[in-house]
Length: 72
Image (tube, rainbow, N blue to C red):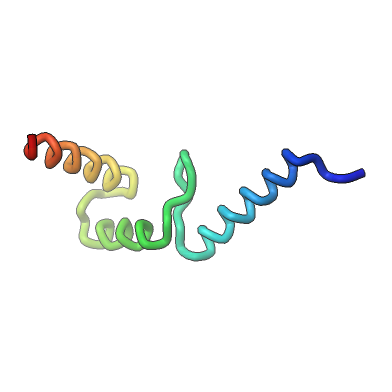
């Protein structure tokens, strides 16, 4: 009996995520962060930009929105 197309897609997606993680990516609720973004996140954490990775993401998003609003 052959594997269903859905199971092949699940295995392919899992393999892709594993490859990104092995390259330094970080798992997030909605996917896997690229290796470059993960390194940037670690730099910000080391510099005490915020106390946790989630706080860094939240602060960065808020600051990006603030900058966009200033341009208007």
